[in-house]
Length: 82
Image (cartoon, rainbow, N blue to C red):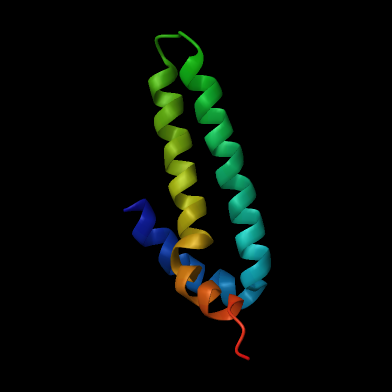
């Protein structure tokens, strides 16, 4: 449900903000979430499961706002025709 909701939101934000800023901010958020998941996952606390699920949900939201719906468009823009 998170993925579907944020993909619909991304249609508006990409048109409003642009592709490049969306990818940069989304990639930064995904990198921070991945790093945080690694740190929280190594700590032996009984309640870290909730934190891991929450960070995974934030990662999915960032992916849906940035790289998810733009994946094919970025590939088309990256290759040059000679």
